[in-house]
Length: 216
Image 1 (cartoon, rainbow, N blue to C red):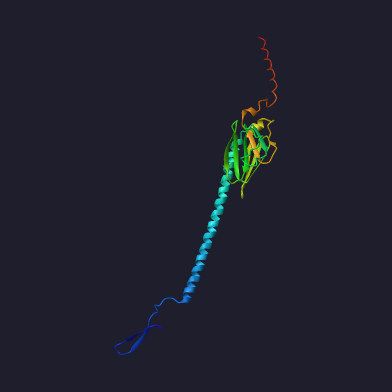
Image 2 (image 1 turned 60 degrees about the horizontal axis):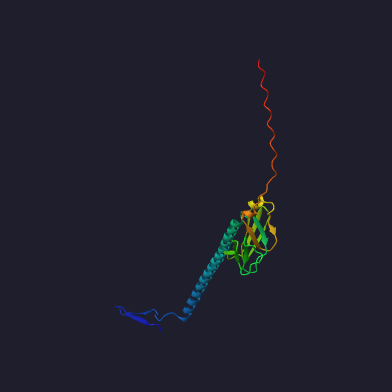
């Protein structure tokens, strides 16, 4: 029951004023408020979740592309001046390298998403991990160039590198003998030491000078 306030004027007229109800909000008003608040919060969480998911996907792709590009640049720099290069079978794991791998050579291969670089020092291998987001590697080439293709989850980078030292030596063409491991050496022991072209012919003899004119 709402309270009323009676006021009396000088003329004796009585006025009744209905007072404002200060007992709080009703249950219906509370339910409407909660429903509106729930919709607003739900929309805010949806926007936040979408933005967070987009950021995570973008960051993952950026990390993958950066990892593959750095690994590709490193590999290309290492093999650019190779004097001997072959494509061979990769090992089953870094802990069990093939017995026929030579300590005088260097090797690149993929295992568990990582690009391994085994650098031979004559008596053993020094191991380096170059990339960690690479699922596959493919190599193909000729005696003039090598194509390196590194693949991640959503990104593949193919790079062609010229091989000037192999181009000089026609006997050291790339041998496609295996799966996806790369063997190379930049040792001068494999450098070409023969004649690149046939010796040029001797230059012709210069012409005889003309006879001096007869004296007058």
